[in-house]
Image 1: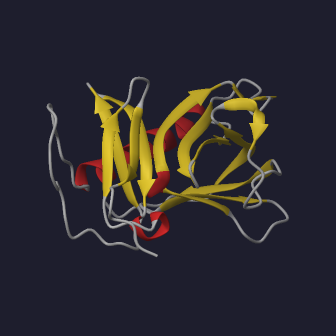
Image 2: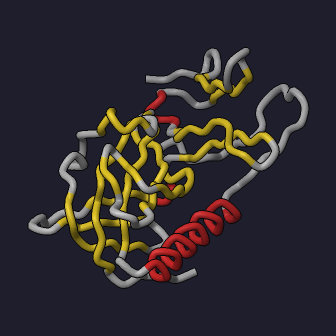
Length: 194
């Protein structure tokens, strides 16, 4: 799917940590709210705030899902639907809020296209399914220096997800298991390197 959206007038509402309106993410120049231009393609979505030169950019590889709402980061959308981008960065679950266009049909189209890009990426990724305990290696020959998205599903819902980069974790393999309260991922014993 080769897609490049037009630039659409919109507003950036801010980025929340763990979808809590009072916990704002301040790194990567994401604190300042404002009006600007929203655009997206298969690799990322971007928002260029007015009077800035560098856009906010969120790679699709880090995006978990899209939600909508009327409030975000303590601000009301003035009747417009706010697109909430749920994504992971540096071990944090983030939610960035945007409105696009004053026209509801344009906003609905943008949300539909964003979901289509996310679904297409999910379909093209390598998937492994287990319905019982599995012993031993499952998958080999993954790049040690690339980010890999690991998602754990229950029925059709994502219950846990991580960005896995072997070199950042200083390991060659990981173990994923279910604890009493949640899913966990950690370096396998004896697989660490410096």
